[in-house]
Image 1 (tube, rainbow, N blue to C red):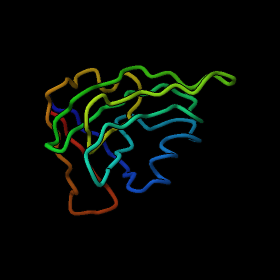
Image 2: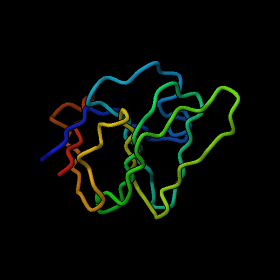
Image 3: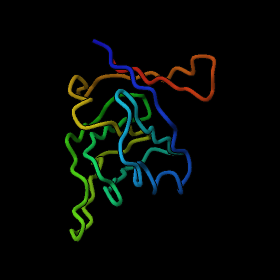
Image 4: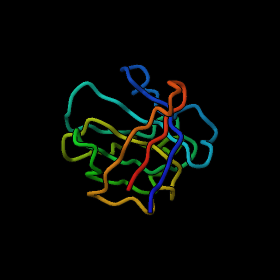
Length: 125
């Protein structure tokens, strides 16, 4: 079963640091896709987040290497917690909590530009 997400791209240090912080919600079947220039172990945080998400870590071969599910928003006066990939990744996808339930380690993904560079579709199978 394939999962499709309409995604925005995060391609530079400012976009990576901001992530989904400051947003009150994320539309269903949407996400933020982090594209890095190299494969390295990376960590994510929930600073400024107000809703839970799933984080899908993807390697250079476009294979899912880890899925962090139901990551809670940071508590108002809580400590900043990090969610590491544990292995080198070149990409990551943040989606609403629960929307990655059919995605498993070892799944592959494909980015489809759909002939329109402003709308990207990421498909997992």
